[in-house]
Image (cartoon, rainbow, N blue to C red; front, side):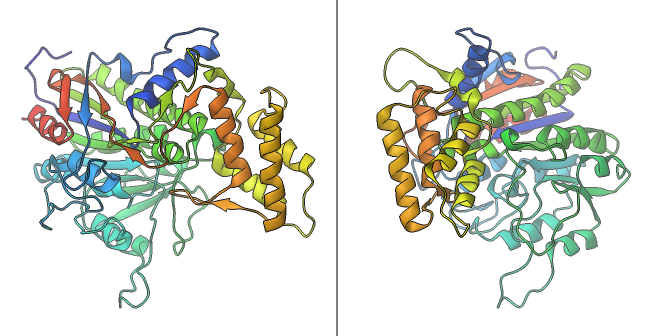
Length: 452
């Protein structure tokens, strides 16, 4: 490991857990410990780094930031207004750490578990007045000349009607020299490509439909791409072409799960990002005097509390959840889409199979009555969905997940973001600079300092 204040980073890994507050990290460790029958912490890779700190996350316009303002700040060191991406509050583009290093001849990779034109990845290459301008963000990706992108493809591959624009983003990226790889195995056959975009689908993609995210770890199927596989691809891809490289890696689905107040799924996403981090850490161990790894978050989501009543936690109950609240909602909703309305026992069976309720997890008479009330409401309305940030969910499923969270002694204060400070973990060249209390505008500046 480089001595304090010495060395120059040639390889920089910048991990961002979207929505990953301190309690998302600590809760994951305590959950893993409870699975072993212990009270304590089963340490993640990130929390074993020698230097750690915290960062405040407020934006230029709001005490509670959104992902675009936070992403812009983490990418550039400049605060901006909520909703703005890659610009300052006056609409001027801000230069990002990725753009600065690319101009100096570094290889650059941007990767995520959500769409590659989403707020956090977009903050490193795009400059638009609104994060909702997905097509424009994707267009700027194509012209960024960055070397590697990985994630769930484009959220808006085609322009909105009436704009006069007709170019599909996948076609545009290929025109700009990007090779499109569909899945991990295909990517390994294309490592000689000049530039690559690695996407989730292993069977090709519908170039006219939006892509949202790589499936949650809890819903993972054998052929699903993982954030770990993306990093495993990006490191040799970039190191084989450049003497120096910068990688931003976003665990984007921590945020999605926390918006849904779904602790089991959120903890699974923290673990998934940590597994990707271990790949980078193995690279660091081979190049300790030339590598910097920084882990942080753009903001906390959900106002997660570890404890909701007495002095106990019961996090091990979360092991009985077999799918995300999204998939559970789909399972319950599917029961109501047939010509014949489902019986309560049919719904109850789905809750047992998916969450362990009524079997592994005790349900009180009052809780059972609440679930049956939601069932009767769904029957009368032929299904009943609730609005959440990224996907509408069935009221029965949402209530059942809340019950499991409550029984695990987990509390949530909001379905939105909070102003909670977020953790910082660092190892390698210049890592000592990240200790202590920071503003999120410090982080990009400190990363650049380590490269000089």
